[in-house]
Length: 332
Image (cartoon, rainbow, N blue to C red; front, side):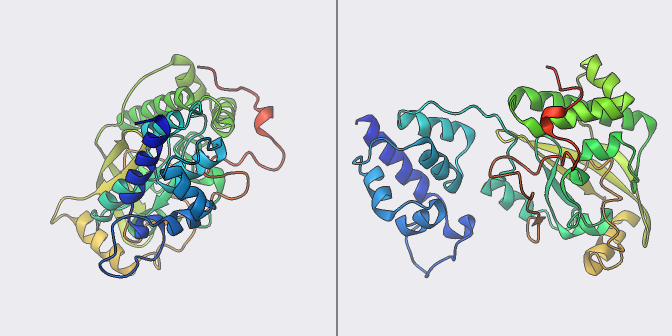
């Protein structure tokens, strides 16, 4: 089989594995064939049906980088699959230069089965991408908070008010793990300007962050105990876990409570009343939220102008600064 024939076979296989609902399209009539139709893929990519057919049949042999990028996004390809797509098309795979905010369908399905657990999903730079209602009810609703206000590292190291408290020892480990995550992100995403600006600003405004960054410390997130000081239901003592998704650098933060405990009862209460009793006062609970690791009802926010697919929400440099003006760019 020629390279063009292999490209068409791969595109057909990837198209067949995605249900319309996973791509945000109507499910279609009962009994329809599995996967996306050419018309549906055309709708997602902005390409013509005729061109997609010719690609799969090997009659269109020189797809551009823009076409391949659009196909990779619509078909929800992994990093390895994306690289394979570019190679089959005779193009050099682009570097993974920017932190991605893509959540694979398999991860969405997994999280959808974790009802009753406050969940927040973060990208590799620790920007909050999406969350479920119980997360908002417990920690405060992130919906109205833009840019850097949803970044866990910024909130923690700049000392923003938090509903979360932990022991001195656990806080030290949390900080070390958070800094190690950001250092790893600069290696995996070397041209992400927003990531490097965030790190430069943290080094400037937080002596604690600067010391940890310069020490090149390495650590990982552990399971620990946190106390959430909720304004309506009182203190909630929870177990905290951070789960890392291989291949896409997502961090799933979850708070959990053992059955029969006071915290489990409060979870059930918050699950019923939702965010009505939280006061909707913003992100008081965002700082220190790592170490917590649904998607039924998961919420996500548009990262706003200046970001596009694959860029993540990123920190907002603010009106008087620009990424290029970072006082201390991250070094690796």
